[in-house]
Image 1 (tube, one colour):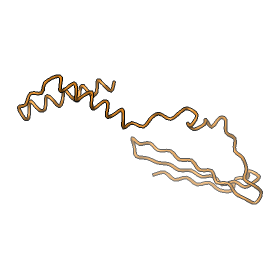
Image 2 (image 1 turned 180 degrees about the vertical axis):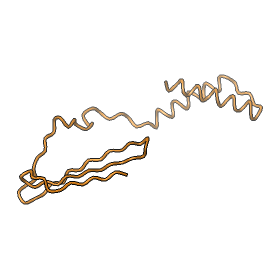
Image 3 (image 1 turned 45 degrees about the vertical axis):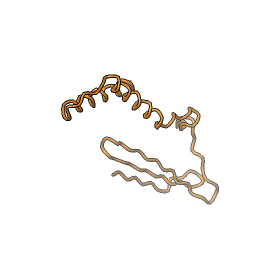
Image 4 (image 1 turned 30 degrees about the vertical axis):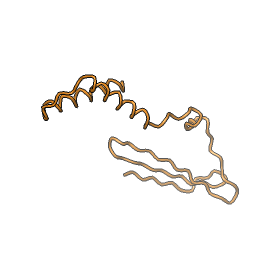
Length: 107
C-alpha cells in the first residue's frame, strides 16, 4: 500500500510539473522519487510496540484497596479525535473500598 501511495504521489507530482511548469520528468525519475519517499517514510515511522508492552485488558485487573488510613483515586480518560472531544473521570475510595467521591469532565 505504501508503494502504491508513493507512486500515486510521484505521478501527481510529474503531472503538476508538466501542467504548471511545462517540464517533462522521466518516468524512471518519478519511480525513483516514489521509492525514496516510501523508504524515508519507513525510516521515520516508530517500530510497533511488542505485545508484552501493550496495556493489559481490564478483565485481568482487579481493584486493590490502599493501605489503612489512605485514600485511592482512580482516574481514566478518553479522547475522540474526530470530534476533538476529551473526557476524564475520577473515583475516590478509602482503604475498605467505600465510595467517597467521584467527578467527571468532558470538553
